[in-house]
Length: 383
Image (cartoon, rainbow, N blue to C red; front, side, top):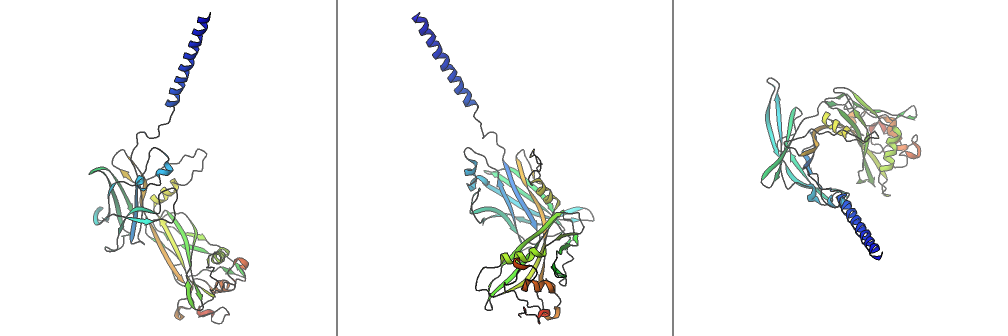
């Protein structure tokens, strides 16, 4: 009887040991292997603009590795290719025979730019690639630009990424004339004027913004010149159509109050000018923006978009395209010969200086003065 019990105990111990061993092996097999067959992925972003003379293109690589991805992201080399050769070529189309002719070529150089603060990725600097058109003249609105990026692995070419874009052109504004101004007051009430685009050209999306330029003085000495950037809105547009966006008079005066300097020695302020900034994006840029917006469905599924091509089975994400920036600068006061011209009409200038309608959220008491000739008889005039 004792022998049988001992045998049963041994059998129980063996079964329990086997069970524990099997559980141990099974738990090992359930470990998730994060680093599998990895395809190299190029991340490229470049937007050409004829307003600029230096054009930057970001060329990075996606990364994967063992450990914490947030820690890997802080290592610059994780996001850089070891060797890159890139060029941008300009082609002009001959409409008579529909043949493109190579006009100019720019090799891209790398440089470091400095970011404001650290975040998830490496800081305070990052490597980008650029070319300058200073020596050869501005980019041609009627040209096509081709990007070629060659990624090397050692001395051999690992893969090539290409992209092509036409330039955005033809954007014009009905407010381009200096006699056009903003009227924020009508019949003693604040009003909401518009920013007008007469023609969208070949743009697929338009964004309008204002730059409000202010000069601040202490005893007739200029001490600061704050610039207020006001994004007034944008939308998808039809080509060669008109577009407008409404701006609120109350917001205009509130933005100025909130963004002037807090220097207590300032005793005079002047609105020097308002700049209208119109930015039109290409069809490719509009598609890219839409594809990267947050999903509006519970499924969280979104299409991906890129106009870049790669010559093997690796991956590429990003875009190479163009935009057009048109800036219309409208001074507060121009000259005695053009005394009717101003970025603000008369009642709006008075409101800026007195703040009687916009109230406590307006600009009254901020020492704004007018140097406009037509305000010479006003209490707020200061040449």
